[in-house]
Image 1 (cartoon, helix red, strand yellow):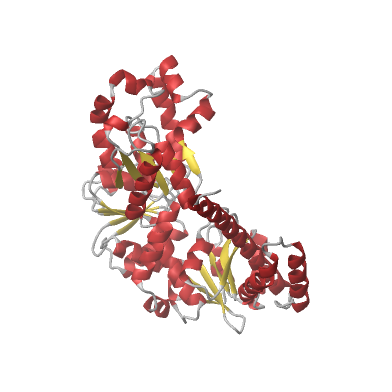
Image 2 (tube, helix red, strand yellow):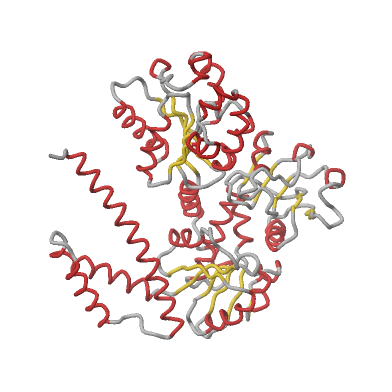
Length: 511
């Protein structure tokens, strides 16, 4: 006979499978609603609904058959509600990893939100669909912000000032209004991180549409001198250190440092002696190399996730009827912006486990993977799959230095990804080259265990040096790199250790 815990585990697994299937179903329903609007077809089809219910009752198993009609009547009501909602979306050329639908689902449930991947020659027909009421509007991303500017019937002040549109709303009369919510987003980003540009000299790296929005925001915040740096302008990345050595704030509006090129950095901030703050509009990774270097020098920083979420709040306000950007801004609760940004940050960042060899990181990683419903990446397993031998075999046959050099490459590649549970090798902290990858896109948990419970099995470095020596060499790095410490003493069984560790994880992570 199965135990209560075994049965509950079985139910939990089934629930996760149901949720995943429900997510897929709603995604398809949303696309159906969009297609019906484009083709002018009615949302509700009573005949199709009755046929579907009869089919489901016929196919259901004996346990579910008595409940199928009741369950699917509710599901169909939800589907009809979703199909009937006004449709908005994010417009771009190629948007495989956009977070916009998820952000808007957290902000407002009054409209449906989709992804609109279009070529340049398809924009005019998309605008026509908006005028016909297929879409209520959309956010606009690279490379169409300037094209949207020219296609809109009317423009807000911020759109005119920046020469770029990132939010379009269609009125009932079919006219399109172009706005630029990036201006508000950037202002929120600075204010939320207590960066005041008033009277300060600001360097803007890059000259694209985002840079124009940043300049407008800085002017509204009474910044002093605002200087652009570009590869082809009068001030470039070679003479900027001489011409603008007195810069007080730097804002990166280039893609340098964006995933997957996480080690790219547009400038050497150590050469700006008056620097007080650095902002980067990139949000993946959450901490770019530029911001990491600034933090190391004790300089204030601001990352792009705040801007991304704040501009979405203003877009949502415009979608829901705000007449202009001023009215939209007045309707936004900064605390709500922070709540959504924190929730999204937790989801985007990896949960990364570090700690001594033999402390149970692999076991803990597996349990957290199930607990959070996230993919598990064990760096030692990735190493083995990549090089055809385990870390222990490499250390024994080729030496520790060879292993460490290879480990650096594995760490950079895997730790820069998003939304994973990652279990690291015990010596990940030995090389400083791994520090930035550990910090760039992870919430780091140090799995602290008593030395006497550590396993020495198949760990040649631990055997050679001894656990105490290794711990003394690495302790400071474990503690300084960790956002949270999971400290679990000696336990009688692995299950007791894991139960306590997950409990402490939940307390720290707020799950």
